[in-house]
Length: 117
Length: 111
Image (cartoon, rainbow over all chains, first blue to last red; front, top):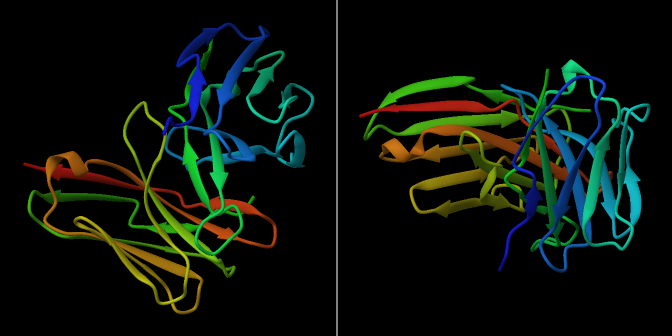
């Protein structure tokens, strides 16, 4: 079974530029998550989709970050314009129902490491 | 968002030693997950726990779902150099439908 795919793996941009990340979840996983992971910290949820609808985007900086999952499969996360503090690893994850029901087994992609200069 | 308390923050051990780490929360969870993250990679799911008191093993790894549902433990027996990495716990509550992550435990194994 293929895992969560992400691209690009690395991106270096200058501040005020725009950047987009792509994610393709595990086939059949209805729930998709975007996380930001700053060095030395655990993942922080940015946005959660259930199919093509947003479940939670309360921690997404909406003035510069946007995400979509138009067909309920793959997703893009965009930053426009980027700031220095956006330097981090952006992780995509998808989840499927576990033994106890609910979306409680979550699998991560390899991440995109963003450096903003 | 909520972040779980994970300890210890870092560990330096000799190859062959056993390792224990734990994760605590102020909230009750329905599921506890343990991940390992290597540098430059995404977290990889090691063990998933679904019931209070449950003890689950995956090779040399053993994890337990605390009776109070507010904590979980991960043990690694007979550590080897490839165990090096950062271990994260994550809790999931059916209400809220969201995963909360620990602060991570960095493990260094000295050959």
